Length: 136
Image (cartoon, rainbow, N blue to C red; front, side):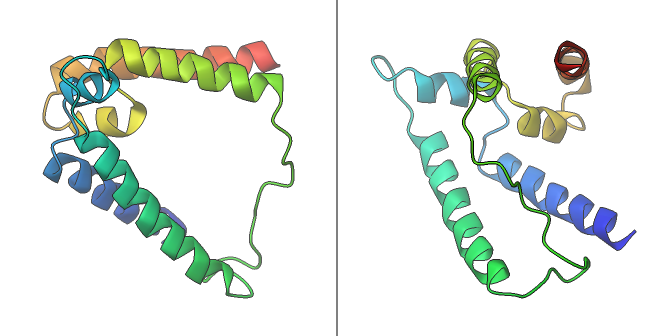
């Protein structure tokens, strides 16, 4: 229960940060990707801030012998960059670029614009289930 509560708290902070920075609008994504037009670097600055905070936290946490609420760290064992990883990344990037939406902002926007976000969330979940089905 503590882990779920911690994850919920982190998600709330993440969503509030996206909202505060104005990153819930698809126009921010489109503006960031439009490097030859009306380029808007604000999404890149938000990402850089997130990377800095995450890198600092990762460094401090990994100095510990074990996590606070678990017996051991559960880290990925594979470091192989394979075809499914690359293909999934490309599909995600194309979808993000076309829609201007990615899962974090969609979930964060559910309370603000549920009518606009529920169809995207349904398609997102359907894509996740289709991906699991294809891999099986």
